[in-house]
Image (cartoon, rainbow, N blue to C red; front, side):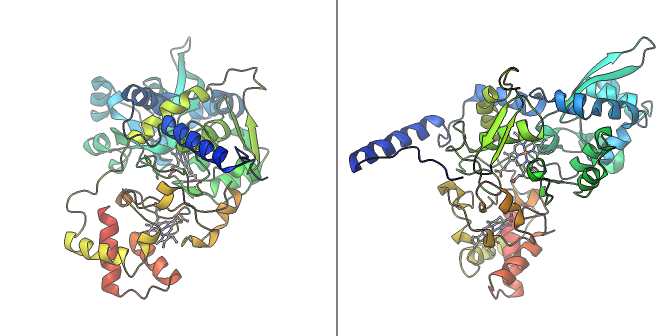
Length: 425
Ligand code: HEC
Ligand code: HEC
């Protein structure tokens, strides 16, 4: 369905006034204001890490994940499906007990203890003690941090647990590419009678999620992208669906509302007539909206997270300098990857479906815009694999894909210099 224009100016003066008003509104919305509000950022961090928006209705009442976790998800299993443990939430006594081998990592009761400490990243639960002293998980929900945070592995390395992976300090905004959300959801007994959906969920793999399967039952999952380095972009997500026109709180808030309501099951309302897709988890307004009022703070927090700089010594500086010349010259990359964020999404530009150099491009057909946003490139070193479908395992594969698609005729040296430049961003 076509969007109704906001204004129908009858003559030029009205049009001028209307656009002046729009500019003033855009300035007020704060998304081109370089100064973020520290208080809002602080609130947003809390929401990002710990808020479920009431989604226990989905994860407990509907999917019964509390029973699944309590019965079968010991810490070893949790780590094996990519869940992360926040070492800073663990009392020293617990860390010492783990180090001494006194904690049973093959007992789901240990997972419940970790959940009660708010130490399982992205999982929020209520734990009760039964008459016999055992723990039970009465309610469980998920938060944004589940998919968009990981940990620095410092504690698991020190403790020699799980090959050194999975326990450490939180890294908010870093996508959790070890997490297998499909496999986790598929554990729910709700799919006992629906083996097709269970098979679909199990087919996605680690680091992948299809945030549109609830719309159309389709399945071409995307990589879980970073939630950092987004300040200054007028369009959010791979297909640029999110912008201030479709969510007054801002482009990132558009998608945060989408995920909080339609994927996490939070109590709120999402509607976009372009897709078209409407989900109302407030029972027509009978339940309080636990999403809308949090969107500005949540977005502010994500805007406050910069892309991480490439580690010293992780690229060849001289080759990267030569690679930048290739990027801006013969390889034509800078025609779309413009400016400081390396994307023309700072200007609100989107590109036709044939633009993507990824292996599959049908995903965009399921979006609101049916186009692609040029991906911002800062922090590339951190989040392989690349493109929305993860079809390029490495930056070498990205460059090869473009060299072929755009018929650039780059020499082997130019290609490796270009890769060093991409590694440096
Ligand atoms: C089950 C995993 C999962 C959860 C939970 C989740 N996301 Fe995402 N997120 C994704 C995937 C997959 C995409 C890519 C969708 C796309 O671009 O089409 C995405 C995209 C995004 C983006 C777009 C980044 C960009 O480049 O514009 C932001 C920001 C984001 N998520 C923030 C959040 C916030 C905030 C929450 C909590 C309200 C959340 N996500 C919950 C999986 C998740
Ligand atoms: C016509 C516009 C355009 C040109 C030219 C272009 N890109 Fe892109 N780039 C895009 C779009 C759109 C995407 C997102 C595609 C997707 O994910 O399917 C993208 C994605 C990428 C990604 C993946 C980012 C991520 O987070 O996964 C990298 C890396 C990249 N481009 C590098 C380059 C390089 C290097 C060149 C030059 C050889 C180049 N691009 C040329 C538009 C362009």
